[in-house]
Image 1 (cartoon, rainbow, N blue to C red):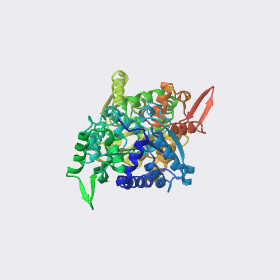
Image 2 (tube, one colour; image 1 turned 135 degrees about the vertical axis):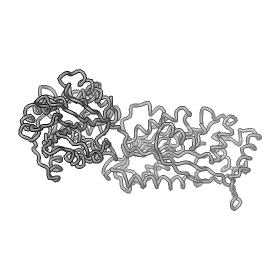
Image 3 (cartoon, rainbow, N blue to C red; image 1 turned 45 degrees about the vertical axis):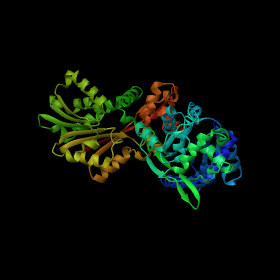
Amino acid sequence: MSIFCTDRYASSFLEFRRMSDQNDKMKSWLKEKLDEFVENDSLQSEDECRILGVGSGVGEMDYFMLENLQKKQKNIFVRVLEPNAIEMDRFKAKVCSNTNFDVVRFDWRQEDAIDYFKETPDKRFHIIHLLHVLYYFEENEIDDVIHQCFNQLEVGGRLLIIQGSASNRVVCIRNAFANELCLQGTLNTISGEHLLFKMNRLGYKYHSNNIRASLDVSQCLDLTSESGGLLWDFITSVQMFVERSSHNLILKIRNMLTTTEQRAVYKDKTYIPVDSIGIKKRETMSLKKLHDNDKRYAEAFNCFRQVSDQENKMKKWILQDFSKEINSTCLVKINEDIVQMMGIGSGFGQMDMLLFDVIGNMNQKINELVVEPNAVEIEKFKSSIASSVEYSNVTIEYVPKTIDSYNMTRNTTRQFHFIHCIHVLYYVDNPVEVIKHAFDSLLEGGVLLIIQGAVSHGIAHIRNTLGDKMYGNTRRHVPNGKDIEEIIQGLGFNYKADVVDAKLDITECFDSNSDKGNLLLDFITNVDNFYERASPDLKNALYGVLDSDFCFEKDGKTYIKIDCSVIIVTK
């Protein structure tokens, strides 16, 4: 008879804790991980730190975690998942007896994790723990439990797992006698090593440690001992094991306790190993960047073009204002038969084709080097050129790389009359180096055109304001036009700058059922499937920014400003 969710189980577990040093060893491992979290996380002391305990039992480990976290975090939320009402009541009683936890907000859930994870998540957590819990799931459920926990981590959050190792004699006994103990369907015998194999198969990167511990089983050798009886129940997961099991089964398991080479005898006491493996998985960035998904990015950018007037405003500026600027530079006096041009992040080429009309005056031939990492966009560019007879004088070489990986410092032999960098410097590692090397790659009299979101550009503001939450350790400052001007001034280059007003209709972003609105959110945040993957807190923070001075309403629609800085650098 299984002892789960009974008072007998709670008593046998407490006896196991009393006769084992496992809890102390677990606490040492947890403290190391918590200290690391406190030292490296970006939470301020007043920020809410959220913890999810899966199978917290009587809460001893949760209690220990809270005592350590409260040294820094003053605002803590704990959600407890525990199906055993007796264990949960003991946890609650312990919490109530400690006034230090009066400021901690607890959300008690007496339910199984499988049922909980069927619900739509309402929060993401900074710490989720599964401490000696995964034995109680069906083996085919474990992958999903780990996956669900991982998906509910905040950026920078930790998933902490402890599972008995292959050297743990309790795990070995349950595995060897699973049939005779009738454990099928109630308890699996997956070891920590097997769990690591699962993590590898799921593609999760992690850190693991061996947690050595021992259990004093001396009382188990006395079949009349009350303490020994409780330990037998815990080891076998069978209620009243000694009283209800056959003498032959008791002898076989007792023999396994006393004859194993891993047994230790010290001061007339018999100990067996109850080792564990501790696993830490850190979510460095639970939100994937949109530009890492070529197809989704192309869809989101196309949606952006449909509801923005930016492209039309830029076309007008290029054909009128920029054309006039070109006529006043040395570029118009090019005597060569072929104009050498470079496009940094050309996308699907809509701006390049406009620039061909402006730069390729007098039917000059144009050779363009296009450095563009998005394969979907390159194919669109190729198709547009192939179907347009007016660009028969244009030859294009496509390099499917980012400008960072292309590394202009190693490609200094080729020089250009004209280089453009349109809405690209948001994505590069070092804008200063890109601008410098682009300038160095210009021929004398050449022109570098940079277009970047202005100070009033709402999307750049969102990415800077919420970057830590969206991008974690990969977050970088998104430079605006003013930042780029300061870089150019610092490099000592001659330039002219202006601002072109533009706006984006974001009305559908407020409709969660709108595919177009969700694609726009992806483009605005540069996060792949933002609405589906972002936490409720992050969504609320985004909608807060969308309700700021960067937005305005007109004719029943909501717009965000996406004004652009246009910068012309001459050599």
